[in-house]
Image (cartoon, rainbow, N blue to C red; front, top):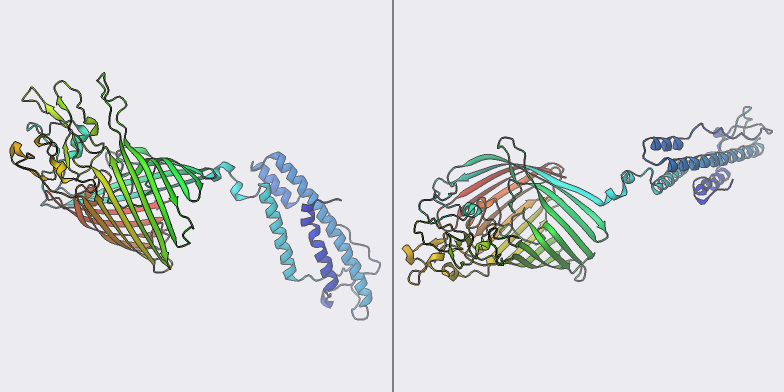
Length: 605
């Protein structure tokens, strides 16, 4: 029977080895049994009713793991190989009998006659039998994998191997603790803007006030995020992530528990497309994770950016231990309403707000010590509020600069009126909107040093510095008394405040910094690993946008200083229990001391 190359590899490949061993290996007396000189050749062994391989293939067909047509072809192939192997074994047995007869004649003087009907069996060393068995197993598995009928990774359709599912769930107990000496007259400007225009100067209207003295113990929160990444083609990937959240806030995906057991909202947190034509350049489009090296002074850890970003790196051009990375991006913050204002025939041109970022980062390795330094510039374009043209609120539905109202606020930034209101009614409530008093163009410098202690533990020191390069203290009174800021100032007397003879005194600043020391394992952590950290944070009123800064320290916003400590322990792989204590005081203005305690259970998958 003719055999193809694959059958020869499994069947005849081992025949020369066995024949050589039969000739070269002496037959010990105790392992020999004489056969009659005229003993006939041993008959071929009967073929089994069904081989194990055929049974396995039929089971795969029954389970619909392979198609019947493919299974039938594999069965025919297995039966042909089995028949071929039986023929080889029969020939080998015949040669063994003939060899035994020849050896019997030569050793008849030394070996006693064997019992009638006995067959002499040659001795094959255990190491050779093991080698043959391993080679056969490897060849069969290679054939199975190539045929894609016994390979675990091919149990699912091929397109599923391009997808990666990932996510995390965090359950948190959060306590917010206030000093009893805090001011109880701190205006909630975020609420005013969210529900404005509001008659902030009308003594007949109550102003929304922040809670500053009533502690909130053990508030339960949950954060759940689920993402799916896909490899579309070589150099092209895409991803999507959904996340919980009480609101569409850009800086928090926490969902508060309680509230009558109502179901929780889920939001689109990321949706991005990344093109990477080479190892040295990539561009990302859509809603993406923050691709820049920044700290929580300027951006909260949960903040994602909308727009386009690119990254170019030096690769190995500077050696194995040094690399330089250039990043940049343009991120639309607000395009303005498509039909703004709703009730006007003539639609004005609205200002488009953009965030432009450029950053240069250098990484260097000195032995086992890793270092990183980055310098970035974050330009918030068209964010500063402007005083409107004279606006008669009794007849107008909007004023000319209403579109410069911030979309989202927390607390800390200096705010001034946007509307230059004129009225014929001295008793009118004068509904007002507020905008940013200053411009924001932030210099952001970050550095880190990481030193390994052993295979699991490192010591890391990080530091950050931010400064608002566009800050101009004279902007506080640029619109005169009618445009005076409502916070972060030392008010003058009556209407002369912000007049030439009574300029405002600014109570704030444009600078911030942060330092942290960590020892232990940097996430993700496996069972038994841990970390502990401590640091200090200082952020003046207008160093950055309060809307995007960390939402935990001082319970969000700017104008805060203080320390923080925390740590985590991995109870199991990717399952940690952690805690953090943040203690913060105001830097300027009315007293507002806030401490935050967080206890977290988190799993990652």
